[in-house]
Image (cartoon, rainbow, N blue to C red; front, side, top):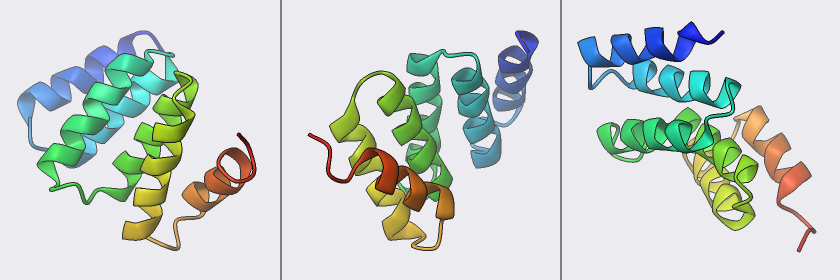
Length: 102
């Protein structure tokens, strides 16, 4: 999978405002444990979407949790659920990683 982030980066270069391409680039970085690069891609997707891309919020939370930023991760996932309350992955993440742990 080493070439996947590069392929996704090319897609973003061709269409820099494409939310799906930006989110997919972030996911490719997540899958290769490049969490800071993933965070940057998700934040860019959020900027392009007016902060309304629920999957980018969720994925940002996953990246933040992997970087040890639990509080920020839980806030990001909560934002994903505000936008789309029926997003099951975010609800499961919130139950498992955000409730009852200090």
